Amino acid sequence: MAKNKTIEGIIQEVDFPNKSTIIYDGNEIKIKGGILGQIVEIKKVRRNKGRLLKVLEKSSLEEEHNCPHLKECGGCTYQTMTYEKELSYKKKLLEKLFSKISIDKIDLIPSPNYTAYRNKMEYTFSDEYKDGPLSLGLHKKNKFYEVVNTDECNIVDQDFNQIRDYTKKYFDGLLKPYHKIRHNGALRHLLIRRNLKGDLLVNLVTSSEKYDYSGYFDSLLELPLKGRIAGLIHTINDSPSDAIVPEKVEVYYGKDYLIEEIDDLKFKISLYSFFQTNTESAKLLYQEAKNTIGNIEGLNLLDLYSGTGTITQIIGKQAKSALGIEIVEEAVKSARENAKLNKLDKIKFICGDVFEEVKNLNYKPDIIVLDPPREGINPRAINKIIDFNVDKYLYISCNPVTLLRDLEVFKERGYKIEKLKAIDQFPRTYHVECVALLIKK
Image (cartoon, rainbow, N blue to C red; front, side, top):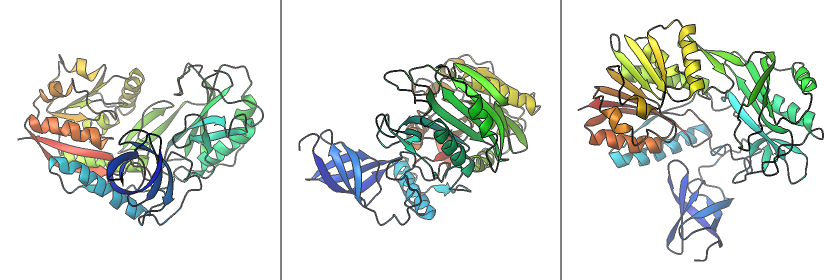
């Protein structure tokens, strides 16, 4: 079959997280995206790989259409399903994935909310089309430059939609978006954070092109929001990268952090700190982690890939001592501030690469918590970690695929999977969080 040929087919198989298979002329063609049973149009790009162009006919699983941006926006996957069917669908995909290590049944804990749950959004400025009006929102599916005006996004609080809409209208015709190839233009990103109390941080990210933004910031304070603006921040970023690089940060009003309270502990969340994007579901995640690990009074806890130290403190406050290791300097600084804020003197943090730090660590743990990034545990580090030979490992993962890979190594080294649960931390997307307990045989 010729490369770049456009073909139609029915999605006959789906693998976690979002990989579909259609059969065409007796050949399997893999694509990213799609839902089981959909009839789709794809572009064949290699012998057995294709790119999804559009959905021609819905799956029988699709009953709803809750988002007007669904066809263009790349942010969500399952807006056309009821939440009950979404959970059932994800559960089946997870069970299919983990059947490779003989786990056939997995509990999937629902999120308390499947709408308006996100506590952070990063919007991008662009053109609606070349040299067209300003757009501000999320990237279109499979597009590098084009951005959807996400006026009615239903996975964020309405305050986010109102601030985004106002910002787009304020600057439309006034300033140009930053162009990633020509490296000119002013407007780059709008970042909004919110805590459960409704306090908001609004961060406008621009290039260093000269402009007085005080009028914009002052007018934000006049918006009739449900919540309260706690901080207005201006970040200067001239980096060619599309990511936000905070080269210069100026607080125009208020402060540059929020306080979130979980499990009787306070956490200071700065603009660029990592924090679970679904706070209510995160509470369930942390409770599940505590229940799974059991009583650790009198034990020494080691938390690897500890981030801002949320898990280290929630679990470690019951331990004899706790030590977190994290490579991101800002995250470690935040973790130390939070431990001090919560008066947890027995909890310490090391800034460093886990692979390097575990080699000669002068700390004898009784139990180890692992919460690595999406790529999982560094393959060079995993055997060093298992060499601690503790009775229990608690593995928290935001990527079941790399979790599966790492669990296989633990099994080879003499550990059994005592418990494995999933938490729907990211409703309407194909992502889930998992908690696994590993016990030495």
